[in-house]
Length: 77
Image 1 (cartoon, one colour):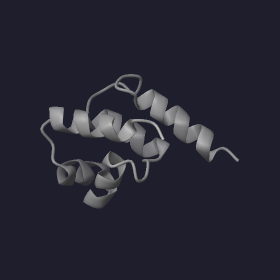
Image 2 (cartoon, helix red, strand yellow):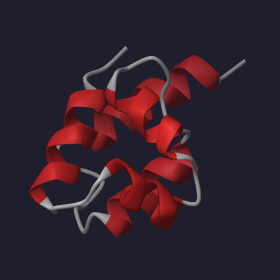
Image 3 (tube, helix red, strand yellow):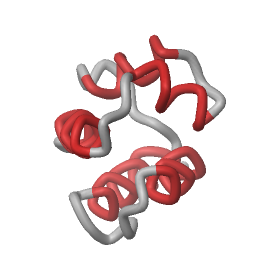
Image 4 (tube, helix red, strand yellow):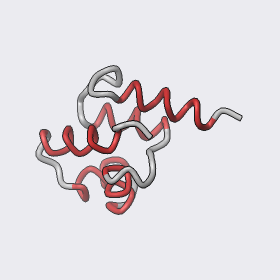
């Protein structure tokens, strides 16, 4: 797995959002955000794109592009 969990947590904290607040904006559960941050699971590409918009960071920044590429490689049959 990539370091996407650390990246999500760092950016979320910088924006002053709780896991619950980010979850609400992404239409997922707080547990989903927690699982991403603990790197138990990864968000899908669509969620990563939405997350980049919500957190106001270009997908290319903060490792999100690397995470998207990792997820795409894993999910390609």
